[in-house]
Length: 92
Image 1: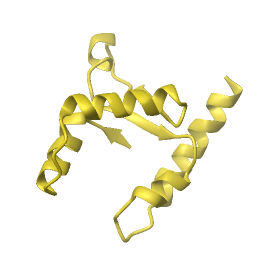
Image 2: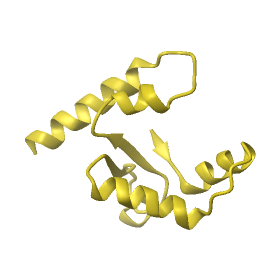
Image 3: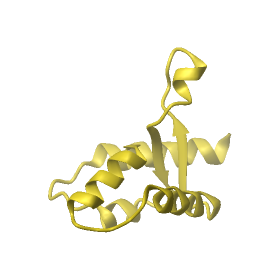
């Protein structure tokens, strides 16, 4: 799933939560350091464009999506994409 700190910040702000962008960056860093989340740049044709945000976020466990997802529809394609990423990461 593509992720952007600005998008998350605006979403939380709209829900009435008070959290800073710096705190969100720290949380993402903590989760990446703990190997709970992995972020990779979205493929672009040039390296500078590829380093821009948003990045694709993959979780170490598909249970995170079902735990944190508030949508009522079950989107299995994202779960399958996450499984493929984890398998490729293990082998490469």
